[in-house]
Length: 305
Image 1 (cartoon, one colour):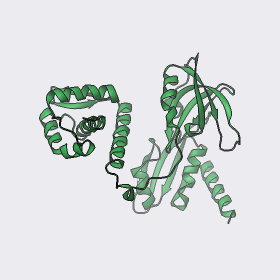
Image 2 (cartoon, one colour):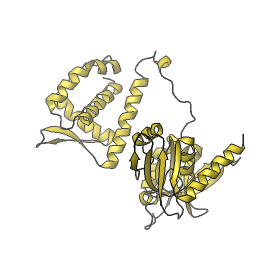
Image 3 (cartoon, one colour):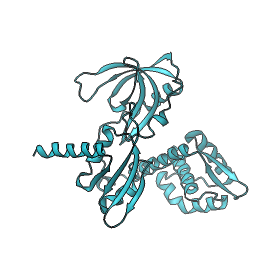
Image 4 (tube, rainbow, N blue to C red):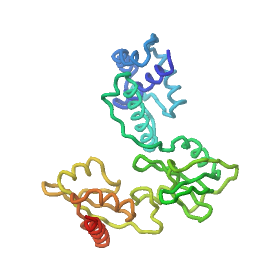
């Protein structure tokens, strides 16, 4: 059996337990009997059966490869995926990636039916190295190219965390030259060097708490979160309900005329740009300072025509 066949089988186990936690071995076996055609699409040499011994081995391999623990509950008489909230987020993303990979590689003649967004590489080749530096508290050196600079500069930094925003990955790090915590986009980072010089993580700094009331990647830099009320037309409101702007989002009004929501956020450039993208489908109700900022931005845009 090829490696792809094994991975496809692991994926089926995870998808089954995600859809129906506490599945018994008999339920798993019936599920695999119904999915054998799918497995053979991934590996036409597949001839291995599904047994209790095979299943237990798969559970160990899934733990070793993906860090996902599958346990058996005596009270529920079935197998389930044991994980924390953060691990669950990683698990969901992993399942999405597997589904996408298998769909794109399902057949050689699928190209006419799949149209991928054309985009530049995201710099994910440095994810593993950066994660190693973060876990082991090692300084990093790299070349960095800002959008507004013609030449790249060499940086030395203490990496604290990785963060994703709008299909881009960033490393949050203390820039040793300026002594400020900044976000560096991985797609503009090159020549990564993980040094042997260690650093101490600041005791009074919490990445999670620092970005708790932020939209996007820009640090609040001392700004205090504010109560923000936004009004959307009914159609745009449906999108906002299905994909909230932030986890502080609360619905205040939801009727045929508008969707009104409340957010608790620091007003940063990222957030203002997001609001401007809604055009005339959104109106700021509160605070007055944000109303003025959005209004002036629209006026400057209007003057260009």
